[in-house]
Amino acid sequence: MAIVHNSDPIVLVGGSQIGPQELNISPTAAKHFVGVDAGADHLMAYGIDPLAVIGDLDSLSDAARAKFAAVLHHIPEQDTVDFEKALRNVEAPLIYAVGFAGGRLDHTLAVLHVMGRYAERPVILLSADDASVVVPRAGLSLTLPIGCRVSVMPLADARVDASGLVWPIIDQEMHPMGFTSPSNAAAQASVRILAMGPVVVTLPRSALPALETAVVHAG
Image (tube, rainbow, N blue to C red; front, side, top):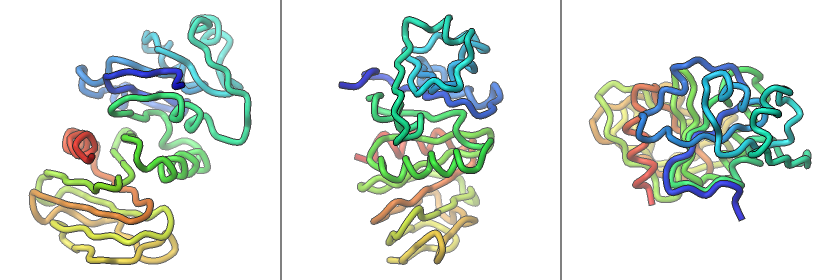
């Protein structure tokens, strides 16, 4: 059974450096937070009480450990990263992940690896500049301003169709060491992306509302 089960969106907060703009998700969405190891220190700094703090807790400060003692969930195994520990123990219609992009490159790659393996979980990875999601099995239907940056990057072997782009992708085999499309853009207001295999779509942070709508309605 999940540690956190909620009918509202959940914000997972990791330990990478963040600014206040990264927690500036719509107030109706960002009601509930889960600290992921040292991410609880960010929540403490912003005066936010989490529903839970999850992880191996090896990076959590003594102050946060004491303040959030009642909601600590220590998962000591080292076979998974803390992001996966949290993701598999949180159930919500939409999950935002903040404080996981940037910082150490290997940590960011590990988070993308987890997102690729949990492609059917409704997770949006946020940074100060970007919003990213792994294309679900049902695909993504996005309504975007013409010219909006749309990056399409495979995490492993994939086959992709993407319409409405400046450079459409038609039944294209993609691979991290092969064909990728990191700097594409919307040529039409309606962009449709289908993928067989794990593919990350990244938009500017300003396009987060469009991505939220696409993720929620993907199924």
